[in-house]
Image (cartoon, rainbow, N blue to C red; front, side, top):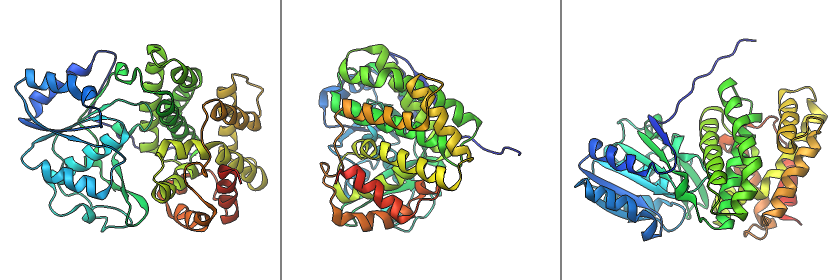
Length: 386
């Protein structure tokens, strides 16, 4: 069978400890006034601002305190008027906000004109202003994806603004920026990266490039995720997780995802829980239900072969079964004290709507097998531990 695929990513990626200064150097070349999107911590973004000042570059700073919403992006975009460069330094929420702002600076209209599902879903007609992404967590991989996930509390959903124009011009990944990140956000973001790697590996859209990236990323996460949670100052573990996160972004942007992320979007809108926590709580249960469905309906499918390979990578044992792989993930989630969906605010009254919305999600289309409503309900009930 012939193989056809294309591969897109950010314009330039700089990786390594001590590379933050590259962002300031390139900012001076790319613009005259920067709109800097940062997290809630002033001290975390201070080194970047000092570097920009040393380059005599003007800037405005906007702090994102939670996951981005329609209101947040609208407010930030209004403040960004007159800026010709956007820099986002922070976690996935910060980077997604920066992406959306970069697009709205150069494209007329309102945010709702470009949002999928709840908006008009119009394509961007103009390239964004130059955008520099500097992740400070290792999880979402959004620094190399072409969409921004934005929540709408009014509609109780999270939706995407999506365009190839939204790929960053420059990504600077300095693993030192993740040192000292507390155990819980390290676990949530790290399991999000592992989920993305695993889902992109078994998806129906996987290709030779994404498979190679997923294999490398899974092996790094296997050896370093728990270590990074338990020893936050372990630079080697942080570097491994930064690579795993980056590779997960490459993979999901080019191969898609599966049922974990298909359900995570709607659940995020219903509960306002952190995206990584939702993915972590769903992962072993989606694996288990997917594998059972594959065994029953298409036992010789590529997806089953991929799950078998994942089991060997995760356990380090080439004789492992697919069930051993599920057990390894479940044990890791237990060690990292991942909460259940019920602990995150999900209740039984959400199940029917979560199934409907999840089935409509673009990520669900990549799942290695089409799951029934009953199977999706089973995942949600097991992840809720009820």
